Length: 247
Image (tube, rainbow, N blue to C red; front, side, top):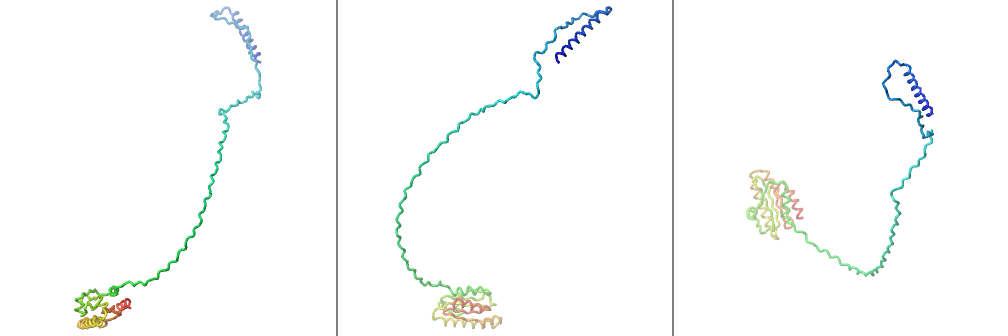
């Protein structure tokens, strides 16, 4: 097909050249054109392509095999695992067990016989007065041995211990005398208390009848060598306290 097209193109070129030459010969009146370079018609046919055109089917494609890439990493031969020889376990020699030694039986020690312990000494006079003082009483003051002898006629040397309290104000007849008497001196102490009570009756009979009533309702209580003389509206409570320590 290509050869035919090339031949037709050459034929058309030759015909066009001949027509141009003929047209120039008939018209002599026309001024000749300016000389131009002669047109050289090539009579040599155009060389045909020496390379044969081969129609190839699109389906027929050359098979290409991808080149195989060799791994750059050299294969490492598996290293042989080190084998450790088992170590022999040390054999322990059995130790000889010592023979049990018979321990002597402890001898029973006799239990100590309990000894009677003496009861702690309690100052009965001080304890009695401490509890009585917790009652609802007017303000009182303690008598010394000289005042005791003057008011009661009792010698302090006849007593082991004592506590004698009289009111600080002359509007109260409240009075307490508690003592531990020495052996053989109880009668002398009772006589002194009777004297004191008679003097209080004479004193309070002049005024304040309610205080005279307290004097007339006095209490004298004895227990062994202990004695209590109480003039107060709390006289029964005082006697109960005294008996709690002396009975």
